[in-house]
Figure 1 (spheres, rainbow, N blue to C red):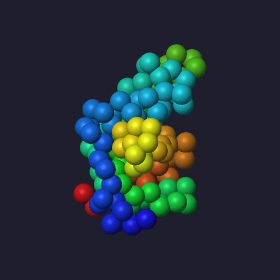
Figure 2: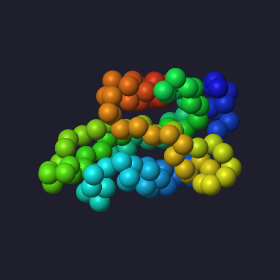
Figure 3: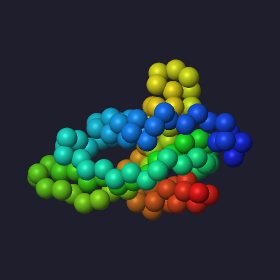
Figure 4: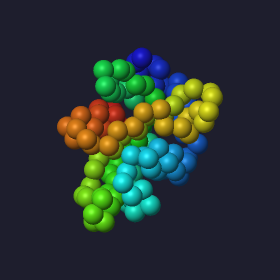
Length: 118
């Protein structure tokens, strides 16, 4: 996968649709998803090496803060998502892969890579 693959990738239908897909994708990973407060960067198109694999197409990064098991906000965490390019089950409006900063250096680095060509 390279820049040519990214350039032909189908963009999610809107920023709002991308936000909804992200919130839905991360809901099962957060202790209290209803308390989550997100901030989003704009959609960006590019190529990022994530978990040893090239991902080309549309990405979005941002931050999320949600309540932990004790009921307090845990602090901001950086996230990145890559949108699916298949034509089945949601297509470009479905998150193909996403990560919240369990390893902050990795997620932040991926976000830098995704947005550096903007």
